[in-house]
Image (cartoon, rainbow, N blue to C red):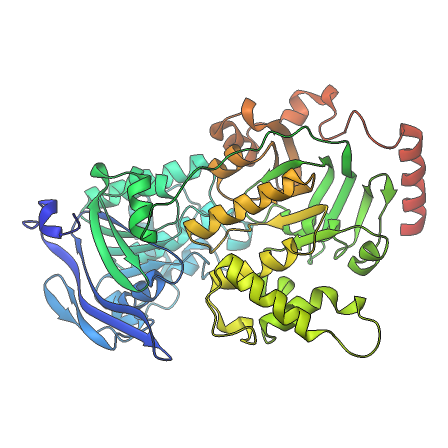
Length: 542
């Protein structure tokens, strides 16, 4: 299995052929003797663990990198791709996970930007309308990017490469920020493009999507090509075993624990974004000990600001209490001083989470250096802890003294998670803790969070994979443009209902206002005490 001759596709025309492609950085191979073919009119998924070479390989095909060994053939002819512009000349267009758009320009202006032989905007509208109609895109070409949803921005990026006559499309994690409904719509568009003769490479970590939309899947491991499979003839377990090189237990479970009274309570929370606009509006919820509360929402709907407000990094109005104690306005240091063991795994791992220029050892010291008495810090203990973290989480690094900026994204995330979990927290605020991690490492993180849950720790889990949220969490709070659309028990809801709430099409708070969404019936504070706290906070805020 894995020989492409076994796929009975040898009679089809080849759009892209990668022959013996190799690329290394500082003596370490990112890709080694890769041989993969993409046929005309097919969807090929590329799978692999972190560091398997997927991104490097696609960067070579799209002109960002050049191979040191091997050859690339496009439509049967040897290609010389030295830049993204060269790639476009060969009909190759890549839609990156992080969009490259100018916020103050319209959709149409972004699409035609950078084209040498630019048509008049009027002529461009005609062609863009034809593309939108042909593939079923729903987009206002005159709308400015800063007014668009994430799915609209992605649509602009896809139309942009089609406008440049791309016949070979590379989509990098295209559903990472989409609702289930938006993802299904995108897959329909991708299938239409395939049926129209386009050749599509899909990079995704969601195995269910691979099996749903792709015709074949090529698997890389540690920079080397392993096999290509027909998706109709495989399953998640086989794909995972090829990726990892051994059998992996894909069992994700929700621990059933008798939850304790509320540990963290939030009432009437309002938080601003950096530009002064509303990020979170009148949000109320609570976290019990031994409970995982998931947070679902389209990217940018207030998740980042919510986390930063809770841990003391962002100003807010409203009330936050820990076991009945008001922590309003407390800095992270003050929260720690009063004995609250709160860990924070932020979305921005190399900005807010870790100091990129410091070593692994020094990044562990950042969590504890204020506890040191005297002028010296205990580096030996920190170094020993760093070694334990590296061993436990399987961090690939030359040493404990390696600057974290020199590590891969997945290994950086392991260090951040390991440091925060290792501080023995009773509250964990985590945003996308498995982002950038391979399947093996992701399940290890889920297991560790379940271990913390079993210790009666309260966990706020912001995630982007709804299947994981529904399987792993006890409840899910759904946000839409900073407002709570409802808090639901995972055993009583569906992915489709969550998707409707994420877009604001369904609002349980408005449907059932008498339920007082997010207010704990066994709050540690009486209504009178809550009112008194609210008055004190309002006075202090002024």
